[in-house]
Image (cartoon, rainbow, N blue to C red; front, side):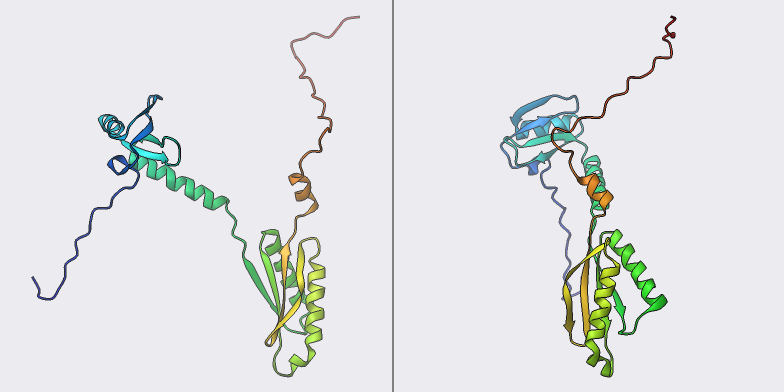
Length: 212
């Protein structure tokens, strides 16, 4: 052994809310055959292990807590899959920054405007910044007009948050996405008392036509 060198042994990881780690005195145990029984936790653990399974606490705040007999590896896989699906559905709103000069116009202006429209349609916010260099700072009003024009061109896609704000040698504005008319109609609940569309009876190809 080398003097002065410390050897650290990794302790086995304790699986929380599984088998003997469950602290509740009794649980509502759910077994693979569909049977459900309120029983002392040690007895439920033994029964699960007799089936070659683990007892996993799935609803710790219930009264009594709910535990299910199942394979721990399979449970871990299902939990990771649920987290992955939830993460896919979750949309993180980002702030996309677009930089301008006081004299930005023409193709460069249209290019940035199209980018902003795409960002807003994706549900993100847009930060439009006009940068001043040298003596350009004396023409802050030009930057303000540019930002207000830019926000106006994005009407229907985004709404301006307040007025352009000067910070140091930059002036900026934040534009947030807005719902389109179609999106508003989709999210609008049906009016109370509105008649339901008439149901069209299915035609029966086996019924012969009436003979007069």
